[in-house]
Image 1 (cartoon, rainbow, N blue to C red):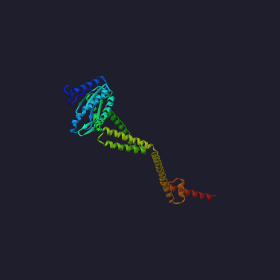
Image 2: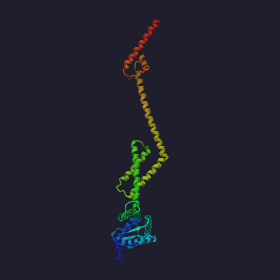
Image 3: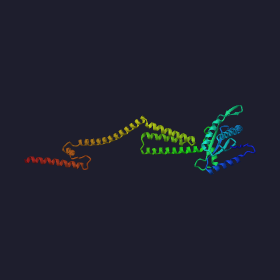
Image 4: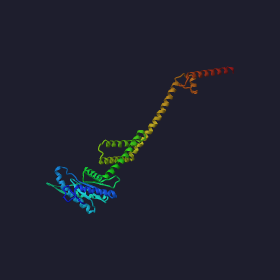
Length: 336
């Protein structure tokens, strides 16, 4: 792997010339449809202006380690160092193979110790990778952007690691799809809750998950770490809720809840019967307060009710009929 530095010798290729060769290599890979991977390596820490001289000493040493590792594994490519980063492209190799070599390099650098004035210090690196083995459109500039994004993510996560941004992006898309699916399911349960079709424990579960989602929604930062945490928390809650719902305690609680619902329905039904009975008793009590003569007997036999229309007229007619019957009986008795 050839190299140039920002302080390269006159016979060496300049940064712009090396970048031009890298672009041509990427264009050929895209034209002939073979894999090519872009690597961007950065030194962790050493951000102070006073440490930049030390960085310029370390970066060429890191490039030598990268070159030695790739050549030992028969991997050919183009690379350059520029200030605090190393950029390289590796054609004709599967991106996962380059990722594996990058992890090896991270491990090796971790064991290095560099001389610091008055002391010695260990160093770590972060590596970002981009490749063309995905369906999205690719150019040299886009590969550089993918590698740089991976490097930034690796350093933001604490450094000392490799990140393939495209794989992270695909993972985030998958996480978003899963979270969207879970949110839709929760929304459906919430709607069922509003419609009164959800059991008590499902109602409680839906409200709990909905509350947790609300906490994450309120978080303005939606970084990969936040999304992974969100997915992990939702998965954990879902598993625990399932385990809880399957436990004997919850089943007993659900049984008790069912019994309570049954008793409530029975009480409601008995209350209705009681109201009807009380109404009948009131009517009987009213009937007993009427004249205890013969008319009251016919009131029961004829089905005469106090709330019937023309009740008084009917009572008078029954009295007249009874008295006429008595008179007829008396006349009949005299005739015999």
